[in-house]
Image (cartoon, rainbow, N blue to C red; front, side, top):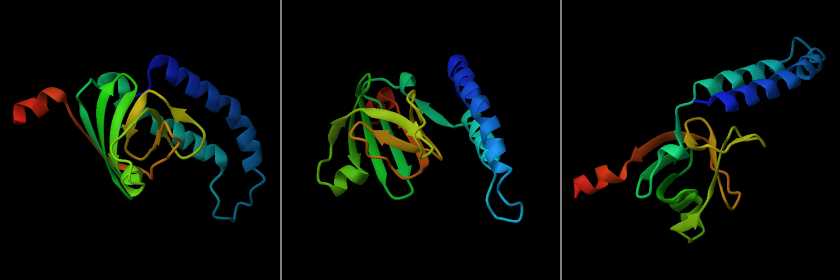
Length: 151
């Protein structure tokens, strides 16, 4: 969920652009299959309020996160604040797993990014090398203390 300042910033950003988008959308023929841009922005704002997300601040060193995207499976080990050890997906494909790397956050696929989120279903994860995953389908967090109790 968005925090107070993040939510206020997103709402302000959306409101400043909605008027322009509505004017642009009025020029779209009503008999086309195109969705007016204002409706898309409103849908994104609603989606942002109801995201099932894994926030970076809630993770600790040793935690493991399994992220399943449309095309891949990633295993992410939390090393330290902002530093992760990632294997799977793109990294396996390029023969560089595991890779010590930052994770910028999550995006809907455009240039807007939520930096406080590690992963959220429906969004795409962006790594420090600018690799962008396909849409995330499932996220599973395994806390460090749960891993030690399994051994």
